[in-house]
Image (tube, rainbow, N blue to C red; front, side, top):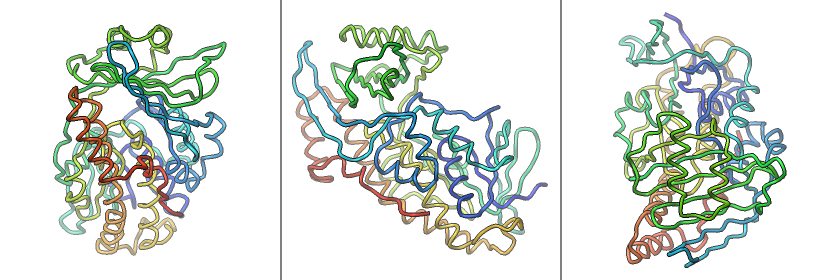
Length: 398
């Protein structure tokens, strides 16, 4: 049986960021990734001020800023019977950009020491060693690994969160398609986040630069289409935007079909985040495995980056740098205390994000003006008139 100090399950944004944060603190880790190469689903990711603060701490922000332009404004329009009913405009003073998810995960992976990521490594089960009380991970290839610390960054379908006995994620009654469109001669759109809600369809677009646009389409009621392949996803999306203006339909028609993803939107309820037990022994979770949320605030990726910085900082305070001894002098008690500090620091931040995301999503889903007004009032009562205050959060220094 192989013994490793820190094992991170999942080589997406959360897993790579956590490994990199630990590396910056002088602590080694191994990332187990089930795919054959670095992967990322979802095409694009809106990264707000709080996300850039975390990327600054991870040391990859300068590289990523070269790939995207600043977003200066966010507009949300409600369309009824083909006419604009309401419009909400928000000027963005702080840093906000859209990134290709692949650019982000590649930047994180490239900054890690060689050999940190082990591909084709899929875990199938976890058990606790009866003697040491450390977790033992069983892989699909028959190998087993004993870890001093196990961090689950394995997404919404997390095996590690199942080991922690966290409840199942809940589902919004909607599906989302995300993709990229390339305009060789320039798209001509302003550098702003534009969201439009008409009937049961919510669409949005967010330019990366003068030639590339990230877009999404959410159908609030159609939960039947599974999208067996990229072409079928494209056909479903064209059906959803059929009643929109020609520029939206053209954007879908000429998109990079290979970039398309279709997902059934899920979330972990604010109450479970408030009361959930995110540690079992020396095992914990981060990213979507901990707090999967809808896309309605655009904070899922940035929150995962925050997790990485906070978790590495808390572990480093208790464990100190790893001198190649596999955290030899670290006890279950000291590691548990570090994880508890991480969970306590993150809990209320995540409760706020998940609550605001949930209420925003419900306000967009409902067809009733009375119910929508009720959700809007709740949002103002809970979060004030500054509905983007969540972007000003600072996860602190590593």
